[in-house]
Length: 170
Ligand SMILES: [Ca+2]
Image (cartoon, rainbow, N blue to C red; front, side, top):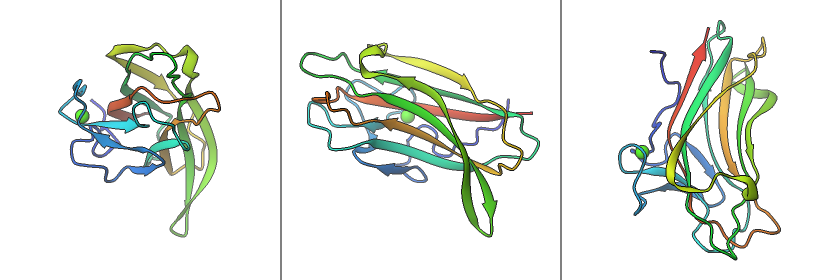
């Protein structure tokens, strides 16, 4: 079993070391978590979303890694008109370490789910995606989960993630 490169992968110990932007954080959903009791959450329920909501975490990548395997649990509650789910994206940003800084090399979109095209379900579903080859100079990567603001979006019916596992394949 490969080492999970993500810390606090199940959101059970608060937000740290995840970084959040917009209306994103952790919550203890009434409808239950996938693992443990807490989840990563995006957007408010039935409230106008003022901007993108992002949860992200950076982690080191070994030089001999060929690529990354990403799995996570995902759930959106059923949308009821006029609620429209926003576009959701999962990205990997490959980064290079230099003098203590981490310069981005490239951004890879692993999943892109338009709000109207998401498999909306009250059940958790597990997503598994594999990145392309690690850029030769990459020493770190950042996984980003983004719920995009949409002009058509009137609200967000609860978008949750849990049990984020990233392993390096070599
Ligand atoms: Ca959890």
